[in-house]
Image 1 (cartoon, one colour):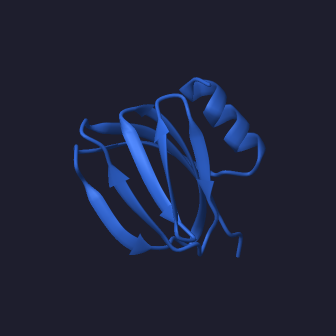
Image 2 (cartoon, helix red, strand yellow):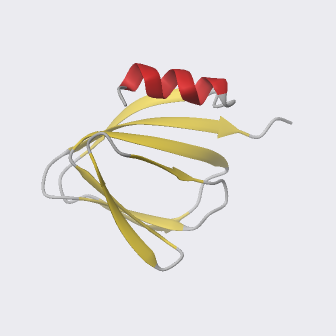
Length: 92
């Protein structure tokens, strides 16, 4: 899936913020959670996510979701990571 198709599909499902991000090679973020649903499309590099005790690595062209409030940790592989993230914030 390309970035435009990813963004269009996310908007159709109520995701209200689409952002392109980069993280350096070897970056890691310990377990944390977000107040929004996140859908991520990896566009370059490798992104490893640990949720519920299981780790999965996503590569360019693959996408995944992290529901709001879900504890997870993030790690970037040996090359810089580029990805598009769609965020769906709860409506007040």
